[in-house]
Length: 243
Length: 128
Image (cartoon, rainbow over the protein chains, first blue to last red):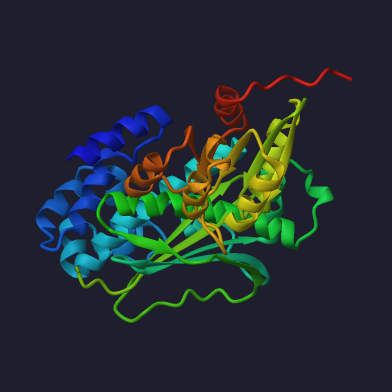
């Protein structure tokens, strides 16, 4: 208790921003060994965005809500169980961290988008990937086409796109974007009791669009866009043992 | 005399942003890409301020800060943590070691200037 008070004082002094209350509550709930799915359902159902995310994860083949087969929070949790709740609890801080990072560093307002509404990613693109291990284990994949990567790097570095060429500078800038968003994400998870460590990030251009998954694990696919910039974020979580 | 600021971060992008943010001021930014390089630079350059990341290869920021505070000469150099990791345990551990401030990435140039300006006196370079 003393440490929490101390941390709150330091957080105020340093000017930290906390994740939304419903997200913190959900993550704390998921971190408990005796997870209560009814409580999880109540928190998710009370928040429009969490509800939308859960239904999207529960209907992986649907491109938009009109195609959902599972359309209630209870049905989604019943069908997908704990792994689904874990994904939602973890995906939300990640999504918040990405939007906040882009908004703060680049003064750009990224918006979540439906996969169907953005051009499909194909051919060579930039992939930035980082793993996390601990009480929660999985991977974060950040993909974007080269044009988007160049525009992001240009905005971060303050260098016109015309003066940039694909390579180390662009990779480093996109890698730092991933580092910041996953660093924020990790802090939120650790504070909620899902202690984990980040691995070394890997940034490279590639053509492979596969997001490998451990059998029994889950994946949440998120898309964000701002004008011509489109970012695809996949979060995979390994099977949950609740320990 | 120019203020000397040591930026210790494995990301070249962050070191570039730090240098760019402080460019209007009469200060020199010295760069190091991990804690080991950072300690060596702190000892040889005697900066007025260190901006320190946490997660870095070779030697992380917490280890560098610990070693810095164990050194009779270097422990007086003020440190601002500049990191994406502001989890409770990290912050409490680092606060115990002793830092002047903590700036969480992502940050705006102005936030960095404000935090740095509270520790050292930033003087604008004369216009062209």
